[in-house]
Length: 86
Image (tube, rainbow, N blue to C red):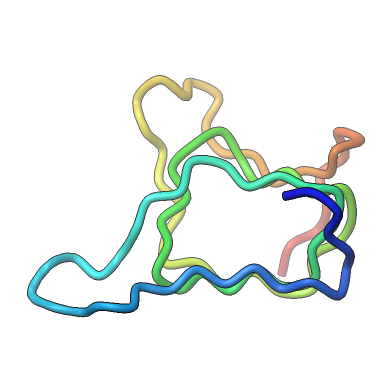
């Protein structure tokens, strides 16, 4: 993401529901700022969620570790600090 602020919201939704798995895999989300990540239909599968400031609300379906990412998942600010996540 580029040019986002702490007032912005990123939503990830599955529009067509059927007999298939109603989730989508997302590798990484990064950007300067984000207020809300509303992704109840998303599995985060890649190297991390890297945002330059606090995120007010994070909604995810699941956080999955995939082969090839040996260090697992990271929730961190761009400055390298790990924020408290409720």
